[in-house]
Length: 125
Image 1 (cartoon, rainbow, N blue to C red):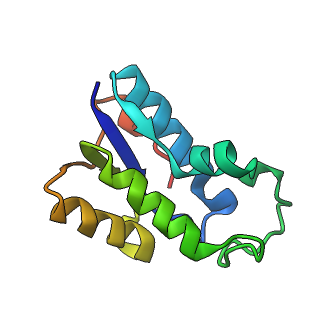
Image 2: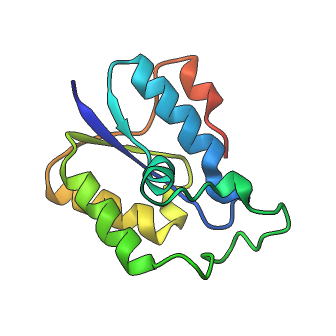
């Protein structure tokens, strides 16, 4: 089974773009991939669920209880164990997704930007 990392914008999106990541994760699993979703990693490792945050959260900032350095190291480590990366729309405006894509290129991983129709129509922006 091919392992694929999901990258995309989080900040500046309600609930850090959780719905887009989750939708793509579910579709990739249906296609036979072992999908690696950073939101799922957060929940599995720390119990942090973005959906528990209040709607008036400042989505432009990282919550103060998040250790960004540890998060980056974990995500890059997870990416290096993958065969491919899936890039969500808007990745160009995300420093994190841009960095993850650069690492994927460096490792010569396959890059996917679309799901087969109609699944790609479920990607939320």
